[in-house]
Amino acid sequence: MTLAQWADNGWLETHRTSREEIGNLLSIVERDLKDAESGISADWRFGIAYNAALKLCTVLLYTRGYRPLHGSHHYRTIMALPLILGEERKQDAEYLNACRIKRNTAEYDYAGVATDMDADELLAFSKGFKEDVERWLEQKNPDLA
Image (cartoon, rainbow, N blue to C red; front, side, top):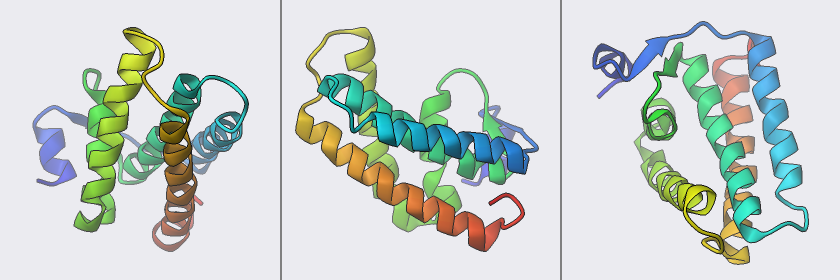
């Protein structure tokens, strides 16, 4: 499927972004990556690192002219990743979707879901993903970078 087909299905709506909006989202990513390194619980570190990755997916989706509609918006934002960066990023989307589920459990159901190893792994992924997204922005949307 394409993003346009997702919009036709009512999963996305069109969205016009700006350099300022993208900059604000990237500032949130920076803050979250820094905060996820602090000495808080693994569950919170995991959730903060997840938020950084989600915001990076949001940047990608916004630069393509879409935003998710309410209901499953985290899922749609994450699963749009291979539609934007290519099918080779499908495993990354699947990994982030698994992180979404774990984060929801830690946030709403019970404590101790994420380990320090989980949090460290997601933090490292998010840092590398940030570099990829910034490089992609420079190449594909320099006016928004």
